[in-house]
Length: 257
Image (cartoon, rainbow, N blue to C red):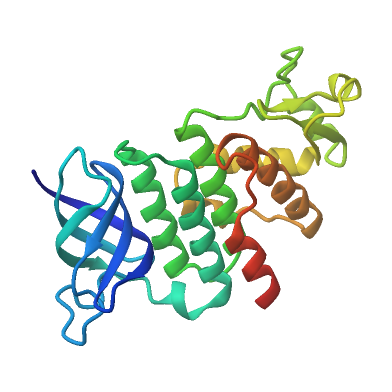
């Protein structure tokens, strides 16, 4: 069967002297691993299209019983040069790519996740400030799209609405578990999850409900709030999406920025 689909390049690895194995996240068919024959030759049949974070249109020779499919054509749709020139934005892009790779299965389509990732890359390409907000929004929205949307407004134990508390006590402390936030009273009876300030919890909910990733760049987040949001997302992502595996890209880019 011949498949033609938009895709994002998640990773590549050398295979023989002339070829590559590439992992693509396609819009229509989910994640697919492929053999790109001749991709490493000087006269490359795919040009420079098979590079990580590129948005491409791929033609794939697909056999259902075969783990490694064959890439027959790959045309560049969009390259995001700032993502490979600016370390801050590269780190965010590579974190998203690794997270997408770890949290999705082969041959399971998630077109809404594909669109969210393209939105992230487009936002990072043009953004001038608050790049981390884009990653926070991506991660919390990805959790929701994959079926793990955390409750951030209502206590997951007693169902108390926390809007008034967060407004009145921005420095108040709440606890977030895998399912979502616990109110101050319920949180005192638990040692699970991580602690987050009311203000950081409110910001994270605004990212969860934003119309697009670009809108999140308008939200002002202090360093303290940022630390709380990052710790909370690391907990949620590791519980639900990566099987408690830490993200290699975050460790790498934290050292070189």
